[in-house]
Length: 164
Image 1 (cartoon, helix red, strand yellow):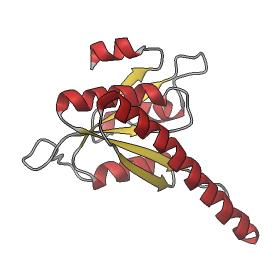
Image 2 (cartoon, helix red, strand yellow; image 1 turned 30 degrees about the horizontal axis):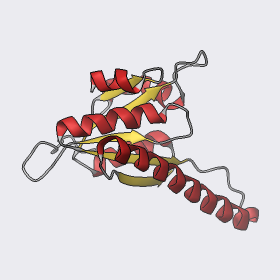
Image 3 (cartoon, one colour; image 1 turned 30 degrees about the vertical axis):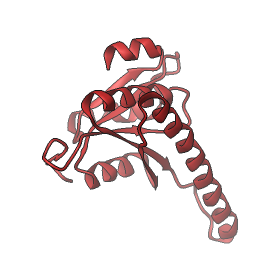
């Protein structure tokens, strides 16, 4: 794991990492990260993680079709999120699609890009809890390699504007 971030060294610029998933609150994280990018003269990296399903070798053809469909859905989700970021901050975010366990892929993306300065997540305001990724990171945040910012999914654009 890379211990040194280079985001503020000459020739580098800081980036926010945002997870684009199927939760309703991903938009809040994209909104905050895009606003932050304007103020920090930085960028945004959008990550979509495809977690592999249990695959039976007998059904390899079906598994390949499912994988292709998952990549198509990932690209569609990243298209929506990139359009949102561009509308907010007139930026073109970097797009990353990874396959594997969420935590493993998240840490690998951070390790591979020393300009990532912060992870931005949004928490669900619902009674069911903050969301799967926020809950997962709650156990890891003390040893996480970069700062984690968690935005309430209940915040309006105006509220996020005043915070970012």
